[in-house]
Length: 112
Length: 112
Image (cartoon, rainbow over all chains, first blue to last red; front, side, top):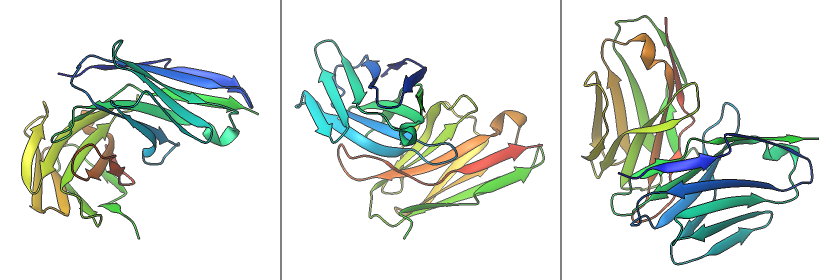
């Protein structure tokens, strides 16, 4: 089955700096890669996703890159703000009935 | 309007009891899921239903029994609760193909 590894497990950055979270996946059939943000005590919410026919996608301060050959994808947050502090999960899916495998999460702390 | 709603939000009960968690989605999605999030924040899939049919059943003790009366509802019944069942349980739903999952607010289950 699919295995998704996520690094780092914790990340502290100064407000205004950039943050990068990296994930690798094992199943070359995976073709959909969502990223979720979970604030303390809240539910995970989608912040950005990318499909395997695209190498990069950007939405304001958030971008995701995908390298299918190396089987890794990354989340980039620029100009971080305190409200970006949360746990971020990457995930990979092969489509179909969509079993989504989640990474182990990265706790991001943005220091004001 | 809450897209994915689950009840109760908190559940505190004694070891050995039987309890149920209910989930409903009003997004018209075909697929619904149950996830368990432990104290380390790992999101682990338990079950997935597509149009009332079980399609994913991970290695979950048979004390856990999901039931889907229709595609908008997926309930979770747990028999003989154990201390290790303490966690946050999230219900989620998604549309066909590679679509993001929409999570409920979670049910925090505490076993005394």
